[in-house]
Length: 105
Image (cartoon, rainbow, N blue to C red; front, top):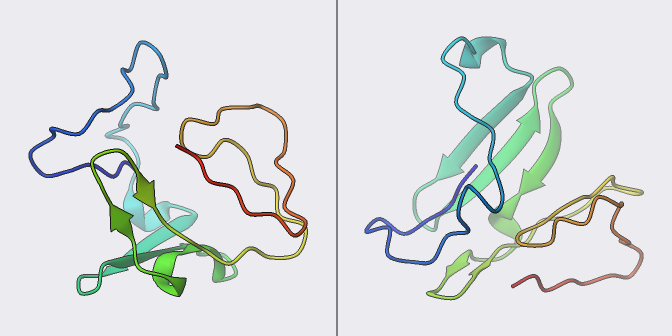
């Protein structure tokens, strides 16, 4: 998922610096293991695993803040989550989540 402003004026890290997965036209959304749903007002979104309806990310805990320099979103984490590479943080090692709050710029 990529969040950006409608006019595409806010800085985005170039693809040459941080490559993103390409769109695969052969992927059928109905056969995906993931489901994405959203609410327009206030804007929130949820990503779930379809096999067991497990919530992987739910931004409804706090409002999404979209500014020129950053995006702030919040989700609840399950016990012992496997959490890697948020925002510009691309460390390949698992992030600490015990009593942990992280602000990524």
